[in-house]
Every structure is written in C-alpha cells, then in structure tokens.
Image (cartoon, rainbow, N blue to C red):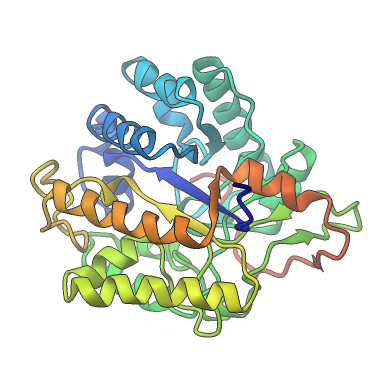
Length: 333
C-alpha cells in the first residue's frame, strides 16, 4: 500500500559529556570525557529495530579524537546522515567572527569526512546559536540547509534556569547571555523557508526545530521527558496535541533528539543537574519509543537531508531576510 503520509524529519544532536560539562562550567571537560561508546550503540540499535534513518549532528572535536573514530564511523555505516554541529560546541557561536566561523565549519567538515566518508550538507548551531555571519559562511560553503532556529518564547526562561544550575563566572555568563535564544525568536516561522542573504540567490533552507503551532512551546523529546516526570499521561497527550496542531496547520515537523533522551542517572552521574536525569535509561528509551510511534502515525520519518531535498524545489517557499540582535564580536574566545 502506498504511504501517503507527509514527510517529517528526525535528528539527534550528538552532544558529548565534555560539551555539557563545558557549557555548565564544570572542571575536567578539557580531557574530553565521553559517553559516546555507551549511547551511540544504544541509539543505533533502537533505530535499526524500528527501521528508521535519521540525521546525527556531530561535533568536530569528537571526530578529531582517535578514541571516537569507530563509534562515529558506525553511525555512517548504519546509513544515517552526518551533519555539522560545529567543532568546539560553544553555544555562543553568534559571538564568533566570520573568519572564526569559517574555521569552525571547515575543520569539522574535514574530520567528519575523514572518519565517516560523508560530506556534510546540513548544520545545526550548538544551543540554537545562529548569526548572519554563520548564514553567510554556510551559503559560501554550499550547505543545503540550516536547522538552528527554535521558534519559541521560552528561551529566556530556559536560560534563567540554566544560569541557576551553573558555576559560571560573570564573564562566562556574559558569553552565554543569548543561550537558547531571545523572546522574539517566538515570532519566527515554524514552516521551512529560504534565507535571503546579502542579495544572493536564496539557496540555503532553514528547517526549524518545530515547536507547537499557535502556542510556540517546545515538544522535542527532552521537553516531553521533563513533562513525563510529573505525569506520563500528560507527556503523551501533550505530544499528540502537538501532532494534531501540526496537521491542522500543514506543518511538516522536524523533531529533535539528544543523547540524554537515552541515558539515565544509572548511566552517567556527572549530569545529574539535567532535568529527567533521575529516570533510568531503560525507562527513557521506552518513552522515546512511544513518542516516535505516535510521530510515525502522523508522518513518514526521514533524515533531514531527505526532508530538505523534498522542500528544495517548492516555488512558493517564503524568503526571509536574516535579522539578529547586534552583538559584540570577540576576536579571541
């Protein structure tokens, strides 16, 4: 029987233990502690049993370390798309100069292609960090799509919670002052669009991390896990509501996963400050399975590159002029 369900994409930001520790202000991240050897096989087995192919946004620093070669290569060998998630995974990427961004992307591309054999065509900024300079570099380097926007009004609230749980200096907090976005990010479109950059041809697509239509509140898996702590019924009902609203508004969603959606406090104790880390990994995986079953009831799940190619030839897609808050560029970070 022909599958007439619309397309929707699924991706996983492969943030590692050291990158969470670094963003949180914890010592010891410089030795690049990792849980990739635990979470990647778990996720690959999970996806294989469900016949799913997705996009993994991989951090360049991880691909540069020999200890991670086999694990990262196994993602590509399993048929999944590899995306660029920056080299240093610093959510203050918007403070980088254009030259620094060029180096971040090119270095990551080099290591990812060497380890996986794939040329990256998609990018997601760490912490949804994005700027006009990033878009310019992506356009010059021939990327098909960016996936860094999170259209929600809750960014400042998430940032406030984050600052309450960290051990950051005033200077570090200054660098992170736009982490998770601004209030006005909630005005961004949920539908994919083309970036109109410097009068150039509109080739670069933006595929937002989808939030709930009308209300603009997140429904990616980490958020569902947060709700699950209070009520499993609420978590599943909330996600079903998001799917119904996506269908009613003709929104083809792009759903986001993180490694901590598959890891519990029984797997990794260093990240106990994260919401839902008091749940065991097995219970988390069961919820992710239930949520993706609901997702597949409404949509055909594909990697982001396939979603982008299906969108690429749509002639009536909106072109958007990039508008970002003016920030001070740090020459040395």
